[in-house]
Image 1 (spheres, protein in one colour):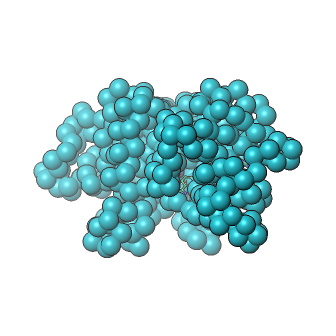
Image 2: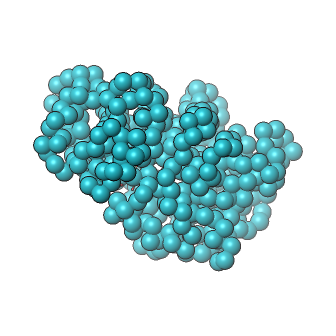
Length: 352
Ligand code: NAP
Ligand code: ZN
């Protein structure tokens, strides 16, 4: 075991602050990674503040962060895919039982015994896992991802959650050339959703509550932008979408979007507001529409997404910050003031 610098929160009401956490010595199948960048996901905020207490209560202290990119510093004797000096990435999962039907099918994200990157059960050290707001991490090589060499590293980090979470449902629901696709909420997930839908050839419409994000949405690949607080603008799109991705992090009227689907259209929730949403039966019944959810993606699909980003030269649009600004970044996320992902430059941790 060795100790590393990190940022942690001591309670739901505490800010994140400098701390020291233990990491295990790499076992034979482990990869030790020096963390260079870590994205800030809205899920970090939900969990630091224990907003998902009914589903996954937070254990304190918490070290969040599951959008990790870095450089391999050491590997165990049985590791075959990585060597010291390689770039490597880690997303929301660091382990699973590897034997259940979900794991066998490549859906580790649905494994009943998965280990989340933070606030998960740590099989090695006991207690909970600590995430990427830290200097280094040790992960079994099966849960480590390869980073395409041509991409900017700060922009790669958010692909590990925001990227896979938007890529996976679009692949599952067959988003393709010529379809009309809506992306609701232009934050970290939403802006990646726009990039993927555009890259897959869809006609993309962004729904935003922030009129100031209109021009950016078009630059990111949207064909049209609707300010969702304007009912007339919404009305024009009734019954026309093949697929809608809802990334909103807070309570909202989902029926307003269900009504925009065509017959047999699907809306997928990836946003995870803490309170239940109210769904009108009639919005779904009329048009045989469907509502579904999606949780990140499996390891193989995450690698597929990274390779897709390498081929299409896709990364997140990031505002790189030192870790000392992380609490400010959380406040800005809550005001939807993000363009379009905060990403922590971990070199800043050295001065703590
Ligand atoms: P984010 O960067 O904060 O973006 C959320 C966006 O939602 C905001 O930028 C804003 O966009 C919109 N929004 C916020 N409050 C709103 C409100 N009250 N009404 C309407 N729109 C609102 O967050 P994120 O990191 O993309 O995460 C979004 C959600 O997805 C979070 O709940 C997160 O926990 C969840 N998540 C789920 C998964 C999964 O696997 N399913 C993975 C990662 C994250 P506009 O300014 O454009 O309106
Ligand atoms: Zn996330």
